[in-house]
Image 1 (cartoon, one colour):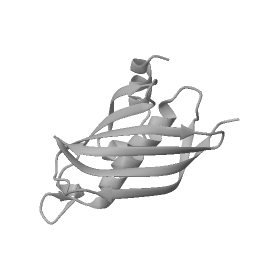
Image 2 (cartoon, rainbow, N blue to C red):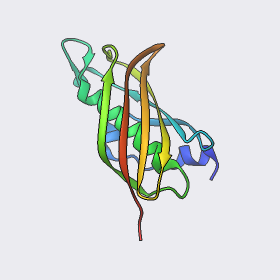
Image 3 (cartoon, rainbow, N blue to C red):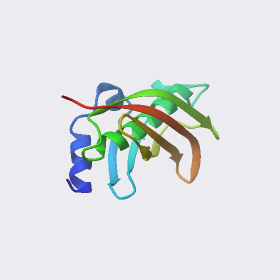
Length: 137
């Protein structure tokens, strides 16, 4: 599969959780094992005015990291997050977010991922996760 075909595949099959966050794959790089996604929030995701609640920020990070692994040809059909750590650098405000997720290392059953979430030039949050690679058959 080409990088463009992977983006198209991912955008054709989002689960409701990613659809709720208006997640969209915008770029994939197989050589770097990296996925870029955009997300869009509105007032439904906010507390204290226009500040996006941290759980939604974590959900965006979890999605971009997980789908970086799922998008890699022949790696897995899905992932189960075993552990995730998110660090919040500053508040995320209602609107557009750009996330990048990367497969740092993949073994036979376990992979290590990292991700970042930006708004404009601002780093909002970053995360690492350990996932179990799920394969059909």
